[in-house]
Image (cartoon, rainbow, N blue to C red; front, side, top):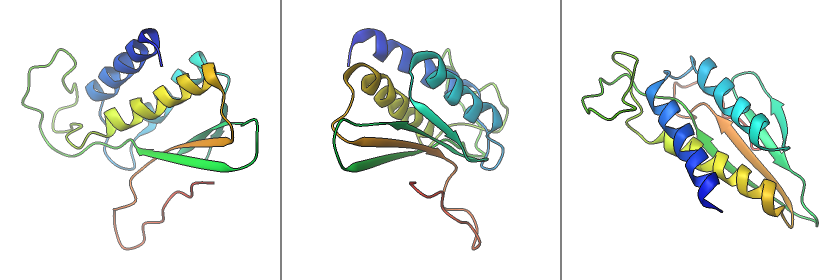
Amino acid sequence: MNQADLSLAAALRHALHAHPELSGQETWTKARLMDFLMEHTHLALYDRGSWFYALCRGRGEGKIAFRADFDALPIEETCDLPYHSQCPGVAHKCGHDGHSAALALLGLTLERTGADRDVTSSFSPPRRWGPAAKPAPLC
């Protein structure tokens, strides 16, 4: 990991934080994450509707997967950060903006280093809403 990648990930996190979307409404968030990975990596991206995953093909056998939620909560943000929420009544108060940016940073790192096995990075809505909620599989 290098300083340039850390700076890109921090800028992504700030953009996600400033534009939070509630669960089931994450169209901008998903598009921003996909655009970021397309712009900065050659990872294969697989769009699955409300979620997507990035795949880094490894040099050897085996697989590993990582996952990050990307929804926000219906909470008013009261801080005065330069990248505070621009959406009244919606904020990233549970860290999903940071989780998603960290997973994107993994993608940047894999772009530079490769991997010894296949690495799947799943960016998905939460698993916790409602009795009929179905989790996004990790591939």
